[in-house]
Structure formats: structure tokens, C-alpha cells
Image (cartoon, rainbow, N blue to C red; front, side):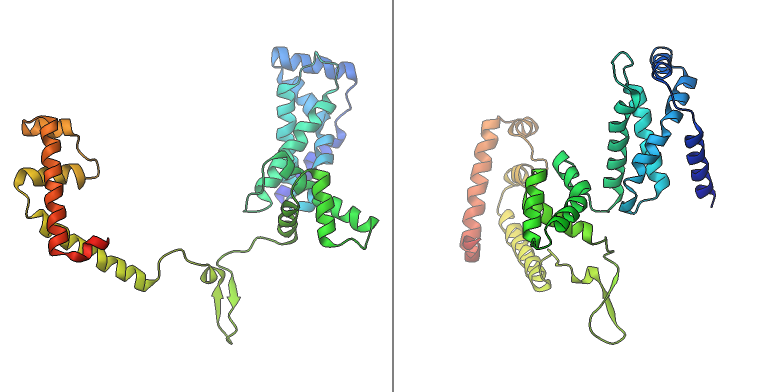
Length: 287
């Protein structure tokens, strides 16, 4: 109730604010731009809150609170005041209209659905004009098919017909929670929508098979590593089996040998591992 009361008070105050003559508007804009006079800013914004309310009313059919639309429009009005150049021969209301509309449109796009829509200018035009164009085409020619309507709207707005189809589906429906219950046909039982989503995870038998294969490979590798001498084993572990992977230079410095010698030992150790694995475990040749 408090929010409704405050909203009504704001509307009444906006309607009671006096209109500004062109000279008054220019003087206030100069005071705000040059002197940052807060009183001048207040007078300008209050005089144009009618414009904000009028613009917000055009977007009330999107199901969002009127008070929120007015607040967003007010943000756009303040942005216009911050950017307005009184030196140009244009009324503030003309300049502010674009900023007010843009601010309200951005708010609608952010909050109308939990699924973000397109943010390009063409997608915004489609979002805000689809219903109006659709109604007009259906009224002008009731015999038009759905695909013909989508095609004409696409041509008018410069988007693909598929985009029109997708946006029309979005505007015709509403967001649904994945935890919302769905009847599965059995009396007294229901499942969540989440239960019907396709999982990208491997099937349980595939997961078990993968685990078994990994364990088998680890056993093969451990047996093969046991055939290396201590220096070969250290080089292989630090060069091939660690996440960071030591450099030839750093290992050479630690072992007191050249990096070329480290490379030779590494290659020899890899050959020994390959020979042991292919001889003792023929299955590995196919991996």
C-alpha cells in the first residue's frame, strides 16, 4: 500500500509541475550544465515527468509494475539531463524522449523474462513491435497464414522469418520453473520438468566401464615405470606426469647435466616404456 501511495503522490506531483517556456528551459539547462545547480536540475526533471509517465504507460502491457517503468524512465530522464547541450537549437523534451524510451526498453528486456532476448537493434525492434505489426496485418487481411504474417514482419523489420517465429513463441508463452510439477499419467504422482531434461552425462554402464579402463591403464603404467632407473623415472614423472611439466633447463640444472642430455634420457625412457607396454600388454597397442 505504501508503494502504491508513493506512486500516486509522484504522479500527482508530476502533473502539478508547471510547464516550462523555451527560454526558461534553456536558462535552467545552462545553470545545470555550467554551474551544476541542483535546483535547476530538479525543475527540469519535474517539468518533464509527465513525459516519463506517458512513455511508461506505453509499455504497461508487458506485465511489469508501472511504478518500476516510471522509475526507469526517470533514470533515462536524468541521463538526458546530464548529456543535454543547451547550445543546440532543440527542445529538451525532444532530446529526452529517446533516453527515456531507451531506459524503459532496456528494463523491459532485462525483466520481462528470465531468458534474455536479443540485444541488437533489430531484435529490440522485433520484441517491441511484433504484437502491433501482427495485429495490424491480421486486421488488414484475415486470410493471411501464420507463415505469411511472419514473412511480412521479417521484411518490415529486417530480420529473419525464423527470428520472428521464435520471438512470437516467446511472447505467446511464459517462463516455467524447471521444478514445476508435471503429471506423468499415474494417479496421484507427478514429476518435475527437470526430470525430463536430457542428460549429457554418460550412461551408468559407460561410466563404470570408463573407470575400470582407467584403473587398468594405471596398473599397466605403474608396472612399466618400475622398469626405469631412478633418474629416468624422475625425468618422466616431472616432464610427462605432472600438471606443470618441468622444462629441460630446470631438470638439467637440478641433475647437474645439460638440457640435451635430459632430452636423450627422456627419449630413452619413453622407448623403454613403449617396449614394455606393447610386449607385456598387447591390448595397449589398440589404445
